[in-house]
Length: 142
Image (tube, rainbow, N blue to C red; front, top):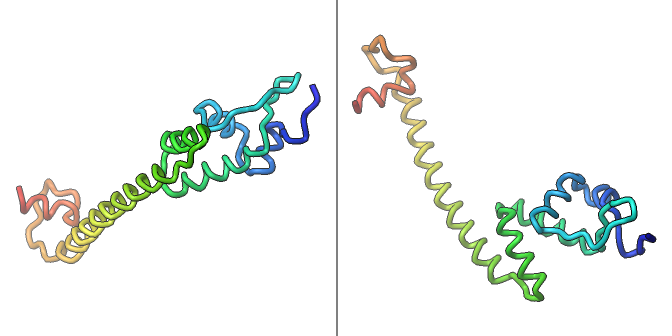
């Protein structure tokens, strides 16, 4: 079988995109990518739009979206629609989640600061204490 100029074997796709062959196969298994054909030797062939899809997948992953979410977006795209409304909703949810995580980290930071600032003032350390930095607040509240 002759390889059309508009198709690339998986090895070339991996080399040109920087995405390992194993990852490309995994994405195909999940339905994120589709090989357009195979060579007589069984090598996967991909249309040139593979590079745009791989870039989209990598960019959305860096934004914190899951492969399942990315598949949903690609499925919408493959049906001829733009997934922008769905992506906007997911990104808004992601911003809210980040805000919650920041709040939790600020609380943790205050707790850690309190532990670090007050532990040396403990006068009597029970024998069952491993480290007063961690356990002093715990024992005082028990």
